[in-house]
Length: 453
Image (cartoon, rainbow, N blue to C red; front, top):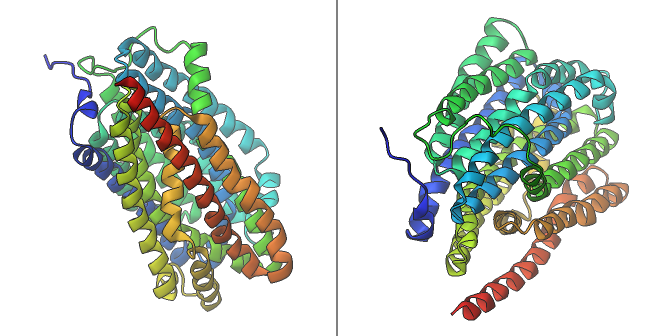
């Protein structure tokens, strides 16, 4: 029988080696996932048409709303799991896993049913027109029907990483991407299913990966595994998980509001093609953002474990190293948007108007990206060490205090350009605030380290 193990190396091994070990699989998985999103959009744009790209962009707020509920459970519980493992509280860690399954089932089913019941008015509110709503509706009906699968798959992947299996989490994500890339063109072109085929490929791929995740967590030789008596919801686990997960929940909720305002602003000042342009630019930017998210996912168990073990010097080191790497990634996004935007847009469509609007928008969207990586890592860092209030504050400040007012004010004076410029201005302000909060936290770590000597 295989001996049960625990990820104690999180508190002893080299920080650089640990971050590489945990972040590289997550980065590969996230990169593969974002590549699929781009390839899927290319299949839809080239195979269905430019209006289908616009219809897909209309669904972004609803996808963000679904992700908000999924992240509240998955990210919150996985952070709690990391801290409990650092404290060597394995019994509670076991209970957390069972509760994640129950919470994802309940939230996934309820959310899917409610959204399907009001799908048309929701999509119109999100910026759909008579020309784009058929595409948006066809896509979301399939996605929402499999919503519980998506929530469960993402939640268990987060638990895999925190339980010391970053490579298995990577394999699950890459598996969904490979299956998606095989099934999407088959359903779209061969079976003539259009945009519904792309959605069906996504849900089926996640279902297959979910079955594999359940197989892993059903192995009794694993220190953390599914067992009877852990599925009943425990108030402390639910409340702590949801509280820690409030930061990514509110971040995604605000992202939903932001995309609604972007869609409405672009619809008013540019029409359906402007929304499609945002759909393309957003996919490109999302590729780089997902790499930073992979870095954050690699940092999270390391920071959480060492914070739980009160090894603050190691917490500081992993934070700094993650910031350096994230800054390199977002600077690459900045250069891509400035140097080759038209080349990137042509990959998604042959429509001249859509190419022109997408390349112009991408140039403006990435103007502040050299500092975006720092801001993203800082928000995730506070979440990783269980300081949910600070993480929530930084998330809401960037979205609500800076970005939403910009989206309401700038388009009145600068039209479509005002919509595109709102993000880089808000990112700059949010990064300054995040830097100030981080310096305060580093000072506290230093004081706590001195006091513990």
